[in-house]
Length: 115
Length: 111
Image (cartoon, rainbow over all chains, first blue to last red):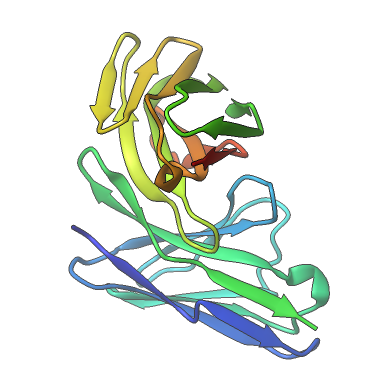
């Protein structure tokens, strides 16, 4: 089945630094990638939608300059958390539509801890 | 605005004790209702998609049903390996539509 590989699975960074999260579609071309954030005991909240070759679309309340999204190829989308702060600590998950009944495939998630 | 409410928030069962999880939703035209399983520190894993009221789908010990207002995930004779958080999500029937998730039900099955 369609697989999205997400890296890293865990990252700890110092406040003020930047962190890049990668999602690669392994056996299909992902023209669209969704980026979610999940706080403990909360639902997955959509942050932004990236489309290959064009600017990402951000959800209301999500800072474009803080969460930089790049989707330069059909198999790679990246999310960079710039100038990270402790409140950015969360679980970040990417997802791509795969069509058919499965609908979407999800990456394995990245646990970001900002200290 | 699309909304998904899942109940209970947490459920503890003994092995073999059947139960049901609820997902209530409001959406401006349903394209699909999705059930996912999420293990700690992992991304969601697809279970079922339901498209119209009256539809039912089964997979091993799980059975999902759908009405116009809610969906149930029935777990028959659960095993400890069924312990996970179960997420419900809806997709609206509009041109540009993403998934709206509930907060999930955390299921713990004790041996």
